[in-house]
Length: 384
Image (cartoon, rainbow, N blue to C red; front, side):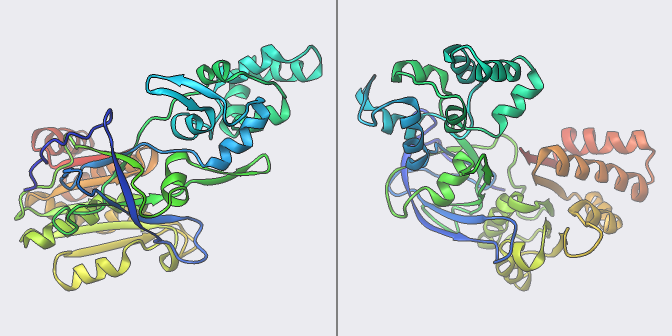
């Protein structure tokens, strides 16, 4: 069984400046996604972790994003702003401390107040006055988009309170410290979109995937220990469901079990869009199967056939075998999208308990949600 790591002096308030030593694409040419494998070197930080933990990353904006914005605000990049540590140039402050890829509602309201009377003001007032329209408006726009449409200038001291501060993003760790000492591996799906004639990125995924040079000690990180998503004893059987980047912790689990010579069986369900372009870590998992570290691998590639097939469909097909594993004490893990995938997987578990356990709908729900999840703590989720 994995034991929790010793707490480090580095935490959210005191992150370690790590370096990215590798960054390569896991998706093939023609994929609809840009999923990357990122290797973070922890240097002399003394940071350690256990599989199931997450890495907190404090991202930065692309300098170009700030350079696009400053002229619209009417600000000189060298303008300094007093900070607890001393004066800092507004350009550097915006790169490192403020969320700029999505505009705040308070900023849009401040722009509305500054607009002269006329059609532009009336147009923006109608958007701000309708909750649904206002939500839609800010969802696809950053500060530059708004100011390009509704010009208004702000002093640095006026703008900063209207923008939201950058918060850390948590990424499930995709490596075992025993397999990769001194490193943390991440599986990052870069969020990319084009709105209002401009290319934009998710702030953290864009930073990790395309916004940070290799081998520079400047990526602020810390470990966020898991409260519950730990591996069981090495002789326990585990079933893991991790489509897309939800695969990350299960790569870590399997690497850890391989190093430790675990005797328990492992069953992995992985899904994505296309086998030819989106089978993340395919060669590694094939090697683990050959070595007996991974007992079973079931995949679901939703766009490789006319009818979409997902991980929960593969679970249903293998329901009898899954129920047998549960009766033998297997632990069940799911990682990834909370809204749809994890909900569908949960419902499928209840249906398997009904069909193969002979339980009534109520008893099946009780078994999955109470007995398995709470009493025996064998149903564990890392969903977001």
